[in-house]
Length: 81
Image (cartoon, rainbow, N blue to C red):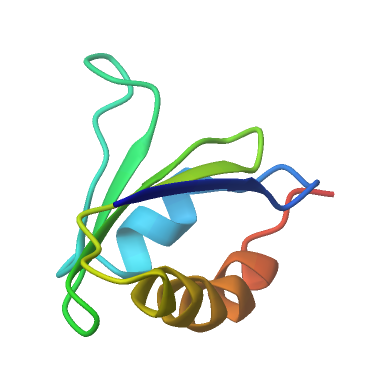
């Protein structure tokens, strides 16, 4: 199952990748999005500087909702001004 959303603000991907390096890979010269591999629920998020997010790998819609609820406060911390 795949979900997508837009948080309506830009995100500092470099800072997020640095502080969450155990879960992230970010190589902007290869791919413009940050790949965040969440452990529980087991979901992969593609996070773009524009604030657009793709959540993939879910077995249930509730997993997508849980993953977004978990990641959103973190994204707010890395909001670009």
